[in-house]
Image 1 (tube, rainbow, N blue to C red):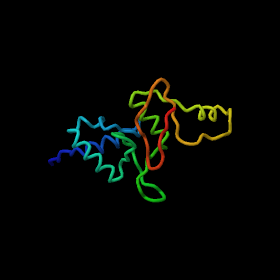
Image 2 (cartoon, one colour):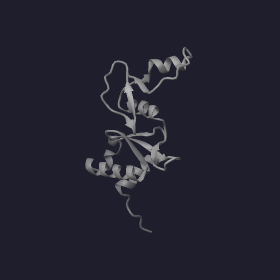
Image 3 (spheres, rainbow, N blue to C red):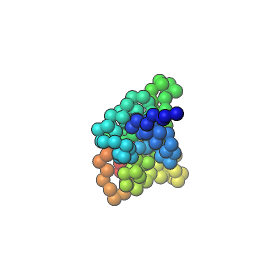
Image 4 (cartoon, rainbow, N blue to C red):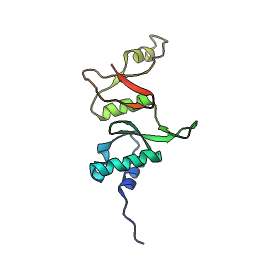
Length: 137
């Protein structure tokens, strides 16, 4: 039996399915599969099929269908995607001051919004899904 060679789309989808240590993927993770434009086109197809959602420029997250609408949503909360993405991009993110106070039980005020502290670095990258945007302190 002759096996049909895997297409670039199939190879990208297989890598996404097999990767368990992260839910965030960079475009450069798939650079070995083909040219920049071809990989970008295949990633757009995977986004339209609902396997991925785009959360930033060249930044994708694993997706699942929403229970309410059926549209693709990230499998992990946006704040976790932000931490994973910043680590993958070489930053050392930490919880914001308000989140630390809440975690350490110094306050009962639940932190509003998605804020990540990135000490010693200025982050210009926008990480967002829908109306929610990660802010940096």
